[in-house]
Image (cartoon, rainbow, N blue to C red):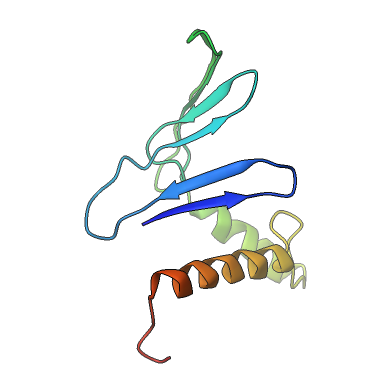
Length: 117
């Protein structure tokens, strides 16, 4: 499956995904002055490079974390609950709901239905 999003700023973003094959799990953010190439697996702590339009690597960031990195979300949730908070300043609930609406819209467009629907 592939998606193309246009944003209020004029930016365009794309995704590709498959549930039948293992993809590279990389991510790329392309701008006018450079691009950021995020290594496998982009959704957990990883390395990335800042690459100029001429192909020169301007900066490399390396991160090594035990596990898949999801412990950070769990620790943040634990802290929020302990503080009596029901929302996060890192990823607010309304942003999470907006993301889910976008995913639901994609799901409708490609014809995916869950058994309970």
